[in-house]
Image (tube, rainbow, N blue to C red):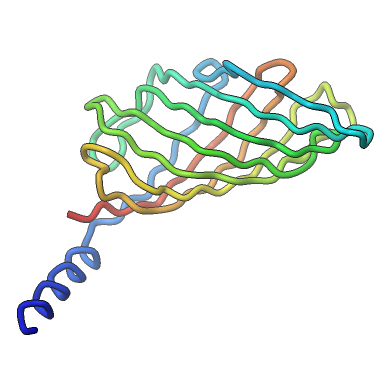
Length: 167
């Protein structure tokens, strides 16, 4: 019993003293593109259900708390919009220059102007659920705010993540 308590306390202290990281970056329009997207119109005027994939290849991603730069990312999403207003949710993964990955889920709300040809705004949150390599035991969350336009392929957002890596 004594050894179990010591083991539990040592694991607890490791996670309590893991160094937290706060990291902010901007996804630039020239780094990302929709590689797949499909929309289905429903029986309600202006209502569409859409699935999509967004791929990013970063040219000058700044180094994060571990000194690594992301080189690419993939995002898969599902939106339920009425006139491009509504909820969007999905999954993401990011690959770093040492081969490590970080991945998670995200969800948000999109708001669009009356002129559907203009860019829409999205505010979302994410949950970091895991990773590989350096990020094997990563946990955290994030938030994002940006603009997008599925019709033109435009996407740009600012992201901030908060995470800890436990040993």
